[in-house]
Length: 114
Length: 114
Image 1: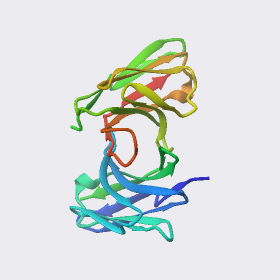
Image 2: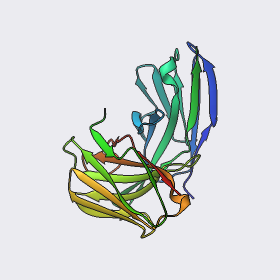
Image 3: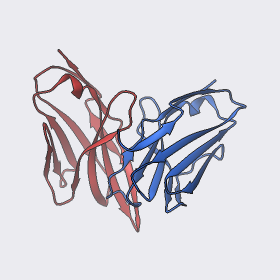
Image 4: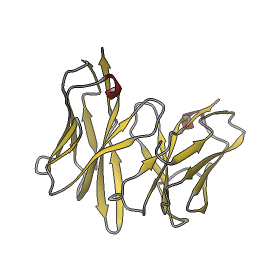
């Protein structure tokens, strides 16, 4: 069964600190992996996307890594800000014939305290 | 804002009511999606429309009925819902169908079924 597992489920850090969120998946064949940020009361917004051949992608203070061999990805947030408080969702896309099927993780809830 | 709007933002309905959710995208995209987001569960893809044609129905109960009159508008008609249908319903659009294309999400409609 294709699954995406994220850890930790929730995380509290102090403003200015770094943190790393994890995503493990069993989806195969793999097309791409995205990290989304979802603020409370809003829809998800894409942060990064990586294909099989990419192992790192940055977007400002957000850096995603991918190890396609171990089927693991991480999202590293540097110098956290209060506005980083949100849910971070990992989405792995399965390619099946001509269709692309997304499998979503449950998300990691991040709270940044001043 | 992402260019995808949803109305209403909040909806409370009884199990015998009929209501509709509306989504509009101003991005010139050709594909639109409905997702369900329940508490502590991953996002679930419900329906996909590409160039106004429904291309995916992810085993959604018939009490949910989508309609896509043109590439810019998407509706979700609701009737005789159950309390377990209470969730955040998210609409998204992308340039074309296929999850290599970035999806832009609306803010969602928070639905409560009483």
